[in-house]
Amino acid sequence: MSAGIECKIETAKEIRVTAELPGLEEKDLEVSLLEGALTIKGEKRDEHEEEKGDVYHSERHYGMFERTISLPSQVDADKVKASFKKGVLKITLPKTKEAQPNRRIIPVQS
Image (cartoon, rainbow, N blue to C red):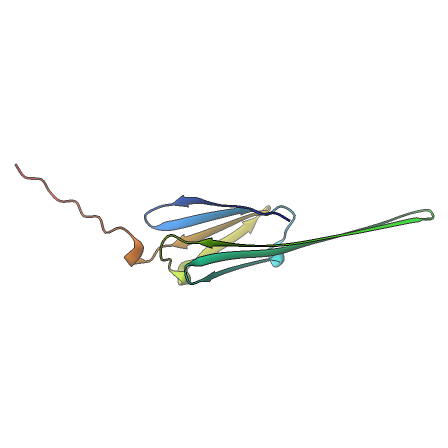
């Protein structure tokens, strides 16, 4: 099973990761954060049985995946949010204050 995972957006305040996981359900997923790396694991199980007269047909498909994404900045683990809807997993990882740019406008005098 393959998972289409990409780091879509990194702003000054957060990192957003989107994973397209068709055919999976929320219970099939595990999302974890450890030492600057985000890990997404999943398993898909599909069983199909069919009986037509004297013929019995059974198929089983299993697929596991695990992807680990190194994060470019420190994130606030207590504020990470994940949602899963219609086969799309969205994870928002807010950056810590220290990881956010400390931009200050300096007035220019003549």
